[in-house]
Image (cartoon, rainbow over all chains, first blue to last red; front, side, top):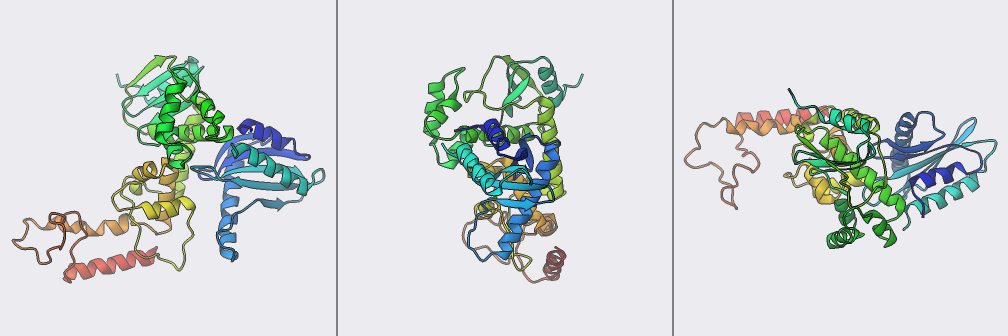
Length: 123
Length: 277
């Protein structure tokens, strides 16, 4: 079982990780971050991006009561992974990781991210 | 001399690297550890106890027992984690979330009569820290976030009243918004609903303002219209349309409609307001 700080350290230990941040989606607050120059700005942007994804997929998908496992955005030099965690009374909390596109393995990173979030919220 | 505002008091305690608890009037308490804030309680917002109780992970009695067991200066949070009630990550998030929620409301309260007690600690122990400037900044950011969602405080203190029909052809709701619409009884304010549902009061306020922006709850434009009822100087000997059912409920019920010109006018204005959304 891990806490918030350990969760970020673990995320940063994923091969190719450039930065990691935990975002409270409801308020758009940066809970904690590592390797992110302006966490407040990043949190606002990531939480808007996640909201837009949710709304867009809700309209596009015929799947009932779907849940987003993760969101992957590939830019020229980085992968941006966002993994939501349902918290018991609020949330979700988003664990977001930026990875160097040249030095990382996307499949491995997704699995690691899932393990980390499971450890953070599992008692 | 006017009493210093709460943010000035907090900044002073941070500067002195104080450890203890600061009572803020009857509204709440701020817990300090070496000049950093470890927890904030506010009567208006659900604390960790309330959030835990509502989550169904532990009963209110269970929380009370843990609290007694932890005793003064103990670490009740660690006890809860050991028992598997919640994970460490959840405890940290729960405490930081409750702290920010309480701080947001405490910092808007008018009362600034404060009393500091050295070495007072919260029974849950210390699991997350905020430095005072960071806490004040976050509260300001949250206020700005509310304004962005719906730039008026009118919905904050008014009972949440969903519209009977949605203005568009479909509505997208967050889980909290759905719960709020189901729980709304046209009597409870957002903060009261937050306590009832065991959700952070700030999240609830934000959700209600977003509902207002989406035109799904009654807002000032629509709610202001029925206010013409008090214009009658004296009650008529027999009301034209006596409400059936509970006697004495006439004052709180919906405005009576009897088809005169003012009512038609009201309906036209209501239609215009809805179309304008």
